[in-house]
Length: 135
Image (cartoon, rainbow, N blue to C red):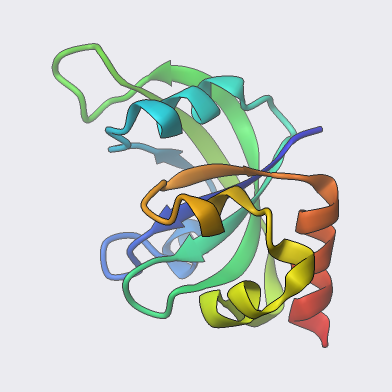
């Protein structure tokens, strides 16, 4: 199993929106590195739903339910999307500030490449963020 962090602006699409829909296409990603990560996703992988720009925090866990397929918002056929479904809301959001302040997360890709909208996590990083949400 792989672990991910996926960013969305909550005023465009939030974790609550995902919960209401039950399943959604994670579309609109137009960065080659992020696309590479999405191509590596497998059904059953887990990802944090991270609210970017507003909130700036991990708020929930979702699972990949469909692997890479053409992005329905792309008329060129160049980009892919995955489908995700909610697993659970974090006990409390884990802010970017808390992640940056935690030495156990110092090597987290998202903290080193902050503009990346889809980033891999190690199992240890994933578990640590979950633990932070329960602290």
